[in-house]
Image (cartoon, rainbow, N blue to C red; front, top):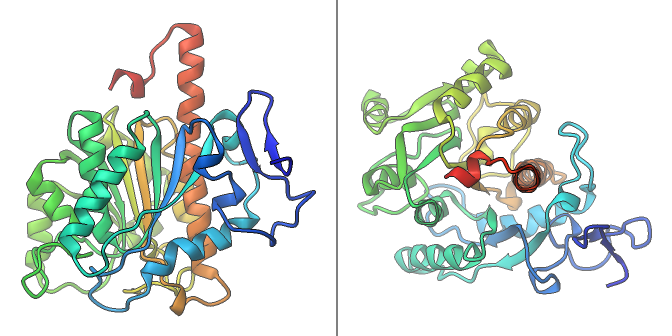
Length: 339
C-alpha cells in the first residue's frame, strides 16, 4: 500500500498519482482505498448497478463503473470549499451492491438492508447508480438511521412522483411518491430542483404539490440565479437531517447526454455544482447520483459531470466530519449531532 497516501492523522487517501499514473490499475472512486483496505470509514462510496426500473433507455446498470473510471482525474483538494476531503475524513470505496436484476421488489429490499449495514458504524453513504428506483430504499435506510423522516432535495428533470407504470408501483418514476406515502420523507422540507419538459397532464403537478414538494424549475435557476435558489432551499430544509438525490438528467443534454430520459433546457454542470456547494453546513445524512447511462455518453461528458457531483457530495459529508471533530474539541454541538 506504499502507493496510497497516508495522511498525518492516519487517514488513508487516494493513490499518489505523482508516483502511479492515474490511468493505471483498478478504478476505485477518485482512486481512494477500498473499504477492506481501511480500518473504518467516515464516508463510503458504493455503487448499485441496477436499471430494471427504467421506462425508456436502459444502461444505467453500467453507471457506477463509468463514474469510477471518470473519477480518476479527481484530485484531493477542493479549492471552492477550501477543503481536503480525504484528509479530514476517511473516505473509502465500498464496491458495488449485488442486487437481483430480475426482481425489483427483492432488489429494493437488498439495497435497504445493505445500506443499513454499511451505515451501522455511523458512516455516511454516497451512492452511484443505477436508476432512480434505488432512491426509495436508500431513503428508507436514511430515515431509519435518523430516527425520523428526512428532508429531501431532489435534482431531476422529472418529478418522479408518478403512481405506477404499467401497473408497477416501483420504478424510476415513482420513488418519491412511495417515500411520501411511507412517511420516510419530511413533507414540510422536500423540494425538486431543475424540473422541466412536458408532463402527462396538470394533475401531475397537483399530485406533486399534495405530497408537499416545492419546485425550482431549471428556468427558475436560470432567472433567479444560484444564490437565491440556495437561500430558498436552505430555508426550507433548516436543521433537519437531509438526503440529496441527483438524477444526472437534471443537467442539459449538452452537459449530460448519457442518460436514459434526456430533456432539453436543463441546468449547466456549473449551476448544479454551485448549488451543492451552497448547501455546506446543512445536516446532510446521505446522497445519491443516478441515471448515468454510458452507452449514450460521448467523450465521458456525463460520467465526468457525475464524478464531480459525487466528489462535491463526498466533500460536503467530509466537511461535516471535520465540523463534528472541531465541535467535539471545543465542546459545542453540531446540527448533525443534535439530530
